[in-house]
Each structure stands twice: as C-alpha cells, then as structure tokens.
Image (cartoon, rainbow, N blue to C red; front, top):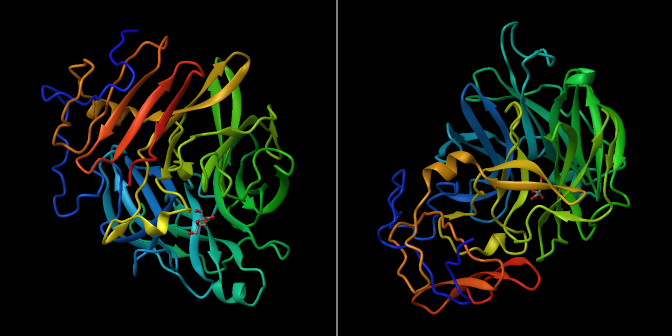
Length: 416
Ligand code: FRU
C-alpha cells in the first residue's frame, strides 16, 4: 500500500477532484441538511420502517411525528427511490388510530396473495407494524400489538386491516417491531419480534394468524438495554448458507446509547441457533440504529439505519427537521480466521456516483465547496496515520489508524 498520510496530516480533497455525477447543490438556507442522507422536509423522524422493493422502486417508510421536531405520536412517513441514493419524500401513509400510535415494522410483497387482500392477480403490499396504545400504557396494562395494513396500488394508498390487531400477548408489554419474511422451504411467513431483551419467532401461513415458534437470546449477546427492531436474513459465503440475526439495543451500545449487535447462526424455520458466544457489533460508532433490510430484493441484503442515537436524537440542532437515515448499505459475510463476520459497505450505486480522485499528498488542504464526497484514503498499515477535518471555529474530527492495536478510530470529542 502507498503511504499517503503520516500521523496528523491535515488532509482534504484537492480542487482538481472529479466526480462521476454532479452532487445536488448545497441547501444554503439549511446548512445542516445532509446532501447524501435522506432527511425529512420538516419535523421529526426515527427508525426506518416497511422497506420493500417493488416494481423498480425502493420504498422507505419511517417513524415520523408531523407536528414537531421531537418524538411524538408516531405515523409512518414515506419516501421512494429508484437507486437508493436520491429519495423523494411522499405523503404520510399510516396515521395513529383508536388502537394507538404506529410504531416500527416491516412490509412484504405478498406475491402468492396468501393474505387474501385484493383480487386474484394482485400483488398486495402488506405492512406488519406495532400498534402502541398510550391509554392502556398509562393504565399499566398491555399496550403493544402487531397489526396489518395493505396497499393494492403499489404503495400509494394504504388500508388498515379491519380485524387488527393480529398478534397480542397478555404477558408482555415490550412486544414490538415485527420484521416478516417468506420462509420458502416451509412455505410460511416468519415474524422476528423484539420481546423485552430477547427475540421471539412466530410463523403464519397468511400474515393474519400467527403461531409462536421459539425465543432466542436469554443468555446471548449484550443486554444493557431493551432489544428492538430485529431482522433475520440469510447470506451465503463460499457455498455455505448462514442466517444472521440483527438486534438493535438501547441503551448498552459500545459507545453509549443505541447500537446494533448481530449473531451469525442457523435457522430451521422454528428456531435460531448462534454459532458464537461473543458479542458482535455492526458499527462501533454511535449513529446507526434500528437498521433493518429491504424485502423482495432477491439475493441482495440491503440495509438502512437511523443516523442518530436515543442519547441525543431529540436535541440535534437542525431547525425545522430533525434526524436523517444512514446511507444504504450492502450486507455480506466475511471469514476472518475460523470466524464468520457481517460486513457492511455503502451500496454500489453510491460508490459509483460519488467517487472522487484525490491529489493525495500529506498536507493541509481546503475542502471543496460541495458538501458530499467520498474520501478514498490509502496508507501503510505499518505506521499510525490520521487525518483531521477542521473548521474555522477550531472544531475538529480526527479519523485515524492505530498501528499498535490495528484499529481504526474516529475521535469527535472536539466537534460540536
Ligand atoms: C426504536 C423504537 C422502536 C419503536 C419505535 C418508536 O428506536 O423504540 O422499538 O417501535 O422506536 O418510535
């Protein structure tokens, strides 16, 4: 590898940089709005929900409070994209009702029309979400149930199922965030559900009737907080088939607050078994939470997360909107020694569109005026290296490599 940086080089992109696509112009009226990451026109967002790929469109729903910039009664906002890079915000799709707020959940394309929604020939999109009832919560009774909504016009309009809820449990109050997929070998739907600090699995032939299968996690992984927003995905590595259980946790993450752990294992349609006993994190940084994958994407496993953390999400100083999503990521497996780990990297579309060449010597450079770019940095792993991004106010973020521990780090102690 070529050594482009020495320790504490001040490094930035040269003005001769070239991009393969023109980045959107900076939003001068709103300097904190990210150019690349999806953020709402206005008001609050948290978890990504109901991601489904259908007829060439990636649907992204999200937890949304359209009356303010802090968390409040939850709706499902909606955005669509054809390339996972440029997003168009759409009208709100699910509103709170007499059963409660609309908490997190998933959506599937019911290609076999097992649910019976619509007419023969239709492919209903079915959302499976948690109803959270604030009134029964106040009375100390159970307050979370799983419910359905469906769309017969490719996601444009949605109808709540008249017989909601479809799954309730009188013994559990933390009972939420259903992620559903079609388990082809047994021709049934599997629901992965967060239940306190464990994951419960349910199955169904038709999305309307659910049967308990098993519970995972009592003695596995990190338990510093409640388990939320799980996902169970299958991935291949060298012809071997694995299942990865993604579990979001709040609090208890390695850098405080919210984080995402995962388990590599096997699933037989009833039960998940992990292949390791150590705790594994998707990210060590604090701003990737509640991430789950798109359904209906064939062999690809594409994830997006909420680019925030419950420790400070309500205080981020952004004005008329608050919080954003991470960039979309492609998930795969990687073997290191005898162990198999989850790998996540920005989706291919993003890498192609946002690649810049740097001039590349160690120095202090002004950043380009564009807000969005990919920095490709090569250095020799034989020695420590870092770059410091600094602004006129004297704030700085250091990105570096510690040669002694072979670890990459990001230090944002001196940023606001
Ligand atoms: C995770 C979470 C979910 C819940 C939603 C409520 O961030 O707490 O468990 O469904 O947010 O907005």
